[in-house]
Length: 152
Image (cartoon, rainbow, N blue to C red; front, side):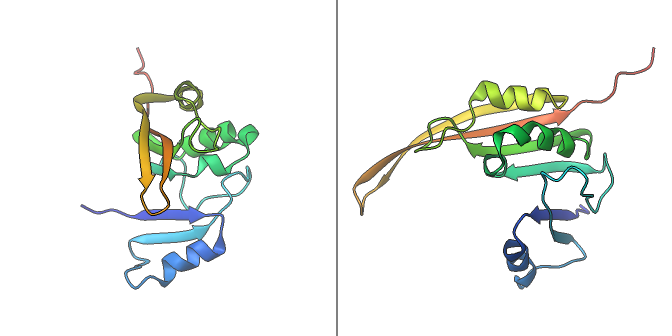
């Protein structure tokens, strides 16, 4: 299987950590600094060229007014049939007031993606050392870019 990985982060320090790892190989991975909120910044790959986009705890770091635009923009880089994989904080995770299941659905549906999976993962985590119980909530979702309709 031939695969190439692009990874980006807003933080130059985070990207440098990736590049400094002994297993980093720029023939199979390109790590770069990028602000995904910036509407005019270009990516090092063309639209409709990615099979998968993975956003883990990414969208919760973006101002709520900008999230839909980011998802819309990123979705243009997916090939038809490509998957957008999303994991982030759910509503009422600790002190977070982030994503509700319906909001996640609307966010990706408004970007033209089809829901494959949209789960709310609720867990009770106990820190036995500190004797603290934490109610955690995460959203875990998969959305697919649809193929264009066949001409009649």
